[in-house]
Every structure is written in structure tokens, then in C-alpha cells.
Length: 328
Image (cartoon, rainbow, N blue to C red; front, side):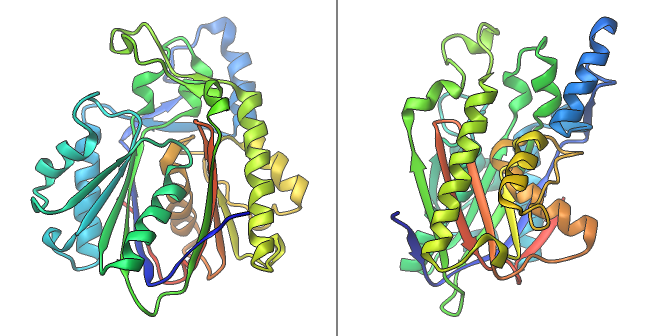
């Protein structure tokens, strides 16, 4: 397996945010005859509630989170050299999310912006891209993930409306010659694109909604973990040697099946009960939620595993022991 190693790159902080509007079985207006059915589905998914955008826009949520992130690191926005934007639910087809982000936050005109059209593997993909930049030049990179998935769901698809939530995250990656090595891999297989997709034609008119093939995603999750196991074994590490495994928070059924298969329940992070599946945000939200709930920090050997539409999957092994973690 080909793996990538990045030196001189430190993951300094991760901040996450969710909208205030709560989404649950009680708010979905499910027909009385179907409540029992969807209650059982909710239990299987492991989600009691998620959060969706209301009056606040995603851009406003991201802007607020950027301000908190910069303040926590005592940085001025002019010091940011590169911004990587990961989203698949931009309000506009043209221009990209980064164009609006630049003007809303008054980034310097010379700041480099990169739009990454990625879903649930977007965080681990974005971290590797950011680390690659930092390892060669003295960059300060903001990796921004944001998804307003509620905007692309069928109003009658109560299962997915309960499962998915809107959110954003802002991760600061900086050049640091003393930083421990970040190691990762990514894989892409477009043959699986119909496992999770949205046709672009006329979707703003409500003629198309996001489509998810559960069994295909489950198979992808198994593949992602098997490849991640092979990945760390190349580094002479076993799952049991890790401090924590933070997977994409797809649903509890998938995570429990995998945890039982590899006997890793004690180190597997599952923090989606009150957040739902937030796509590219789910790994950072899993980390900040657990850190807040337990008042603890992640260790030097933390494995983050992403898998999602495309199909795409990958992982990073990194030291998060000194990473600031916060919820906005």
C-alpha cells in the first residue's frame, strides 16, 4: 500500500459548530402510523437528534467558527496563507464556497483558496493536503469542512432526515519543524459513485434529492477499516496499540459491527447520538464532542478513518495530544 508521510506539520486546533435548530422524531412530522417504525430505525442508527440550519446560514456559522479558531490561537486573519474548503452543499453551483468565504471574512487577496469537492472522507483528505503544503513551505492553513445536508434531503425521507445533520469545522494546521510526523493514505474508486449521490439537474427545484445505498456504504466502511489496518501494520502498529480510532460517524449500526469485528470497542469513538451523521464534519465533531463530554484529550497515536461518496476512503495517523479542541 502506498502511504504518505508529512513532516513539519502540526494540527494545532480543531473547532466545530452546529446550528441551534434541533431535529428529532418529535419535530419531523412523521405520520402517526409510521412512528413505531421510525423509532426502531432511530435506535438502529443510534441517533436521538441532529441539528439543522434555521435562520442562521452556513456561511454565518463558518464565519463565527473561524473567529473563535483564530482567537484561540492568537492569530490574525492576515497570517493565514491557505484555506482549504471541503463541501458538497454550497448554496451556489458557481462560484465555489471559497469565493464567498474570502469576502465574508476579509481574507487577504493573496490568500490561496482550494475548493475540495469531498464528502465523508473530506476531513482526512483535507488534512493530508494541508500537511503536504505545510511540509514544504511555512504555511498556516485553515481546513474548513461544512455541510448543509438538510437542504438536499427528500422531505418524506424521514430516516435520512433524522440521520443527517448540518455542521462545520475549522482546523488549523501550521508549519512546525518539531511536530511529529503525520502519516496517511487515500483511495478513490469512482465505480461506486451511485452508492451516495445527488444528480445536479434541477435539484434546486426539488426534482432530485440525495440518494444513499446503505449496504454499499456498509461494504465501503469494511473496506476502509481493512485498508486502515493494513496501513498501520506497515508502520508496525496494531489496532490495540492505538489511543483512539475516530471513524466517520456514519451510523451506530455500522460502527458497532466494525468494532465487534476487530475487537476495538474500547478505543472506537462514537459520538453521534446528539449530532447525527454530519458528513465531512463528523470526525472533528466526534473529537470535540468526546473531549467536551469527558474533559479529556486525544493521544499521540490517534487514527482517523474517513469513507464516503465517490467512493473515497482513507485515514491519517497523527498526534493530537497538544491539539486544542473546542465547540462553538
